[in-house]
Length: 326
Image (cartoon, rainbow, N blue to C red; front, side):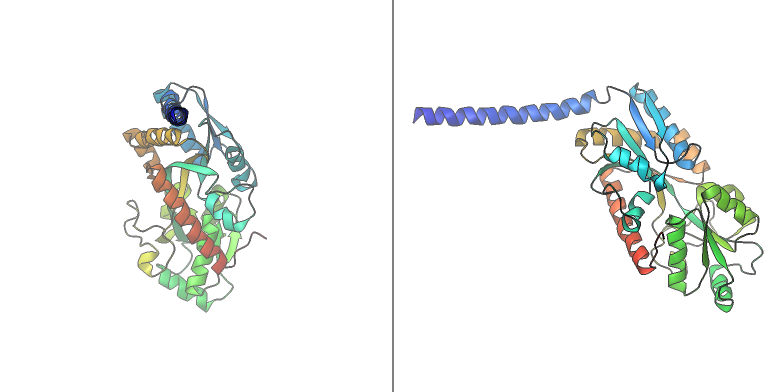
């Protein structure tokens, strides 16, 4: 009887020590992190909006944590090369993805070597990127209702440009066609810069453009609508699509930080807290807003909910509008 009791006590003691050890490991992971250089993986070329934001956050984080934070551009395959690199990286908090909303849109558009929801641990959005729907100044319209009437009266004549197939702009354009019964022809470009150039040159009837790349050129277009639930502070007279009776235009683009999915929660939480701190700095917010973007800075859990909600909405749009990348 004494042996049995002693054995039970020993097992209980060992279990308690194991739990204490696990807790100690988590605490150490949180307090010791970071203890080596951190890599920001940007799955797009240098010089773009995502790259600029990554380098800004990297500099602030390096100053605060006294650890080297390097930005590595890994472009290709619509961002999936860089995304996959982080999804398969060691879950130790030292390889970080600077991703965009395309991460969840691609779930329905293509076969991926990773699961955008399960294989990543969201940290926080850095910036939110509203889109504007603009018409050429040569079109005899002043609002969305007039454009719809014009296009319906001239089937097959007008177009909408985007910065690439399968992008937010493409999905938004097809959603507009679907909900209004018009037939704007999709004309994709290889990136935001050539799209804006085409609009300025009068080669397109309309275009969905991200606010960051188009803001400085806005006076040269007729802006008929903006995405999101609220009007943009710098375009107060332009109504949202929701105000104009259209649905599912509320999601906006985003640039966000994500770690590999199995990263310990204390590390995720510490990284998220630091990101939120950086995004509250006046000079950081000023720079983001000057780019035509909205500063982010929510918690890991909140960002995770946004990702899941966006994935569901975009999946429905892709199915309903029968969008493919063929």
